[in-house]
Length: 326
Image (tube, rainbow, N blue to C red; front, side):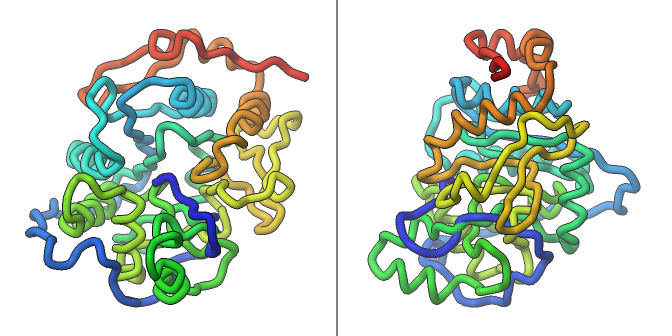
């Protein structure tokens, strides 16, 4: 989800827990087009110790993809890249590919999915887990980034009334859901993505539209919004004065990002919608804040393809250049 319309409504993320409101009515994506929902795998006993599976979808290893995976590698995170080298058919591939990948994981495994072409990591796994835990995500739910723009509906016919009237008005800085980054157990994510697949009329529909319309139907039972950017900071319609990066202070893996409005330290920056021009400036600061290991990571790091192959970043991203201090 690239998020972010031109008009009102919000684009950000939140600290709050699972207070996303009840069944407030449906969008117009699903309905009579929905097909039967496949059977879900049986849940297992909760794991006592869980690490994160970081997953993205990318058909092409371009420069902004390299920024995403390099900032993850600098934080010691291993990334699984689905779809690499395969033909791009539309954003909805992210949902279907992620759903298929989830069947290969333990149901209790925590999964962090991020967009491949507009995300920067600002903290390590420990910090990510702490932020996720602080959101108190109920079992069976998945936490999504939130934002200030109601995309793609705001500019559609009757879109403003849909956005203002149908989305829950729970507290927090950011009101609207963004599909680009989410986190939850493999079992909860599989259940949600299965329902989303049944809800869409076909491959041509954008994942952001599918997720946002389904959200207004099932907000209380399957979603949590990060309304105060505790974990995920969506950047569209966000001022650089409000979200800053301290590139000088070493944080030992903790986030170098501060949202001054929510007083949070999000661990992911998602440059959705109209925030793409900000990416290069924040990239410089994020890479500097990660410390002096950029060159070593560039030479030694790797990602895992969806079929299990190890792919060296120096081969995928031969033109990647670490920033210099200053």
